Image 1: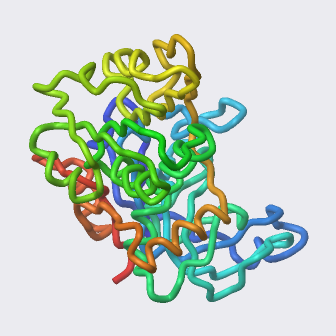
Image 2: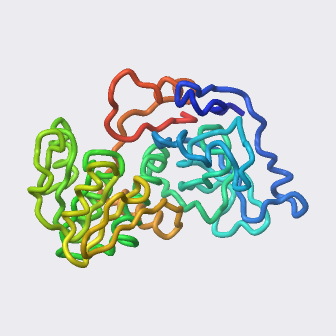
Image 3: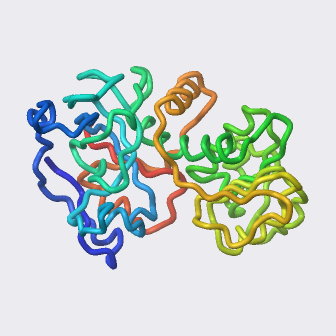
Length: 314
């Protein structure tokens, strides 16, 4: 099969290469003797890629600290199940699926991938594979940040950093649907996009005064650094700062600070798919490229707003 691989951490995305790799061993996977319990083989139709994946230790070493290069990056996918191992439940051969793969296993920038069945959910027939791959990680990250870790409720206010970005736009839409008041942040050039996704106020982080926002019940942070530190002071008593940018450098004086890593969840993926189908949740896809053009797509000459999705099959 064809796949994108990385071998040089220092090279970053410029070190990506399109190569031939062995197909997953479906007959052995399906046998009791050779099975990884609960795995499925998926024929990948579309794959996502997170921009800082090549900075993650899990891209380069396994859980025991052993080098696992050449590794295949990408952990967001939509495709079709082609084989099941012993213990794989809730899915069937030929079923359309989407979800996330394990961080320390070969990923989805390939024609086939082996995934734990529990990390996948059915993808409705009227949802395009590109959309499924584009919403899997972004939608789950927003859902878990808002509702699991942020405990967002109707009537509360939430500050969403990067509201025009791939994750921020998902958080904005889900928060609005939940009945929250949404204040978005970002570059001045992204103001209208943020409003299009449902932001009710917008703060230009290049020229505006973040502290002018006043108190909010929840901060959803994707930046960390100085923005994260300043945001901690905006959280009201009893509120929460939630971040995906690593351990927070500052904490609210009378609230919680939570950093988390997104995990795949079949039920949550199902809720996301429902919202995509009925138009309550729009994906934020900036560009779509083929597997042949993936390396160039991940090394753009200009800024790309939104998610980059690789269409592995037409």
